[in-house]
Image: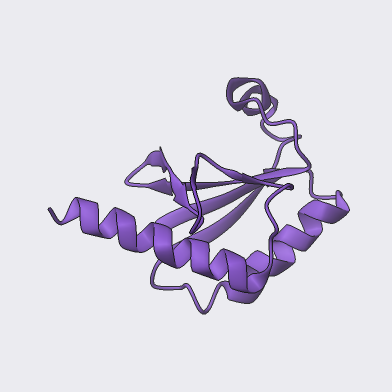
Length: 108
């Protein structure tokens, strides 16, 4: 089973576009761990209020249909936002660490 990594944001926002580029760049590297999706918040306005999404973008991880904590290497977060120093290397590491943690918990 793979995680679903969803970027919530506004497609026309430059920071959002950069996050999308990074997700696309690591997609093949992480293909056995995660599926990457993007959602334009204009299409789901209720989600903004429900999850208090006010940043240019928010990246959330889901596993077995539930939102999951993300392991950044230094902390555990509910999501990544524009304040997280996003790069291809950093996001690939976060995907790998989070996936390893989730899989190890589900096999116990």
